[in-house]
Length: 95
Image (tube, rainbow, N blue to C red):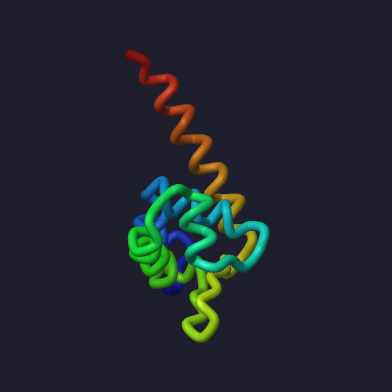
């Protein structure tokens, strides 16, 4: 991945659960089971999304320990801002 906002990165950031996972990883490494519980999803579902984030270069998955971490704390801040923009957009849409 040569560009910071490649199509692969934008695709990875396009799902609300992936944004929430990145925000949750801002505090540091987490175990997938713990992260899934915090996000209110099943671990297998979360792992599918974590693999998308990993392929885009946004998280690392340590397959020896199972820990997941954001590659850069900046991605969590971007995820928070994108989530806020999504909420604002939905609020403005109205009935």
